[in-house]
View 1 (tube, each protein chain N blue to C red):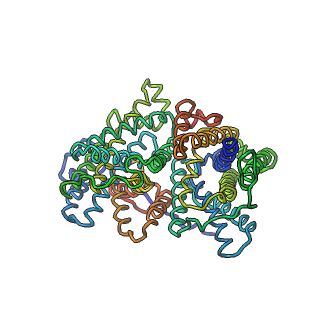
View 2 (cartoon, chains in turn brown, yellow; view 1 turned 120 degrees about the vertical axis):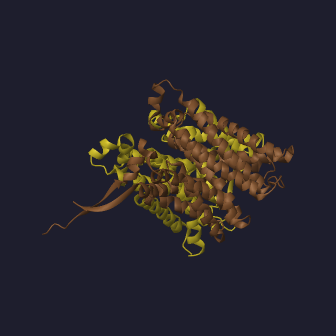
View 3 (cartoon, each protein chain N blue to C red; view 1 turned 30 degrees about the vertical axis):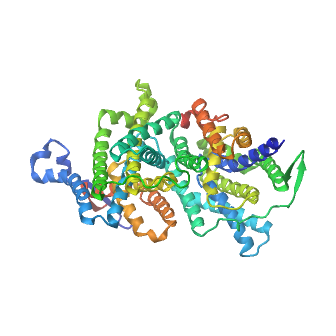
Length: 337
Length: 288
């Protein structure tokens, strides 16, 4: 029997990647563009999108994508400390209700409600999650899954904060562009801010906690304090998204605590590439327009996200972003062995 | 008297709900977030078999128990095996499965007063000065019977022993010739079947609503967190605490405050003793 020829795929870093990783980066325009293009391109696309799609239906979809991208970024930040949240809806809902409540009962203007909801809502969420900071992994996820569902129950049964009807006719944004550009700037700020944060000394501690929290504890660092800070930052981003959405729709209701607001950012982050902030933004910007295109499916859409989530976990666990990144930085060839 | 009777039935209900979840988690470490979805799926399958295909109740109950059990097995074999060891991905995948099942059932419109499972025997009996229907008595009986059966099954049969072996030390179990993948898949299958049994006993007390898929999951998680996820005595104690707590609050304050009891119980337990009242195995490794 003749042994068949066997081939394998070989991956090699592009020369330009190898050079531009080092001090030679500034040696030529080509290398500068190589480094800058992946950063400039998404920023300019994001800033250009609202003008391209206008203020109509797809403008709304763009706004929608941005808020979910913020939620996905906040999920990713918590995941990078090892806190896997299944309750982004908690941040979203608390942010919405704080903004909506102040606007509805006290008639505060948007310029006050959004910052108050961002900081105050995040403070509430952090207080709620502090008792469970000692938990790891699955246990933390369970609690975060339960909390928004219980809030939903509470508001429904106790008839507080508008009960099942929600709070209607809140102050809208003065115009569509302000809302969209606020959301887009927030996405850009969080995306690059978090990327920077996670590579600073501070982020080094955070990643250390994810890898092995006992080692970090042995280093004399109070990991619970760091975890609480992370939840506060992530919560602020999530609550900000909720507050924006509330004023955009001029409505806050129980649907803000619904599972959709957990599953969509999660599916986006997993599809785009877990462990990478850019991936989660990419994932949500693929998923949200897709789901809007499939609006006719109605209630089945959340089932569809879940199917995409299962598919992404089983078939493409590295995510789209890592795939693209590999193609950009490396070339592949077939070699015989 | 009413408090005692309804407290007991409520406690046994919670135990039944949490048993399957805790069985799967205790053996394979898989937190089956699709538990509530299986509970719902079992109930609806039975209803469909009875009302659309005209199968007698007893037979359709057995068919749906087996069908959901098989579904659990193949879910493990087809999907979970790829994610084995990545606890977080397992949780995300089971949650996603749960949502797919529940939302598809909701889309097909399986909720409302037409969807009612029959009681085993109609009627009620007077205990003290309050009427209790037979179904609640059956519920308590079946709950206690199931716990005894599971105890014997886990301690006396070969499959049960391999379950315990895997949960105590997987590598040693493998070296003794126990197939850990097979056992874990069986554990998910058993957990799903238990969810259906719970559904068949509990659902006749009300009508089927797709929302219960999520509510059951919350109850199972709450009981598990309070009692310690992998311990059966813990589940019993937690069910009694939560069951009586809910009934007492509902009697003296308002029925709506029941959820608050659950929330407070979870938060108190997590702050005071994060591994739950009786949790022991995985306390140091995973929880804290």
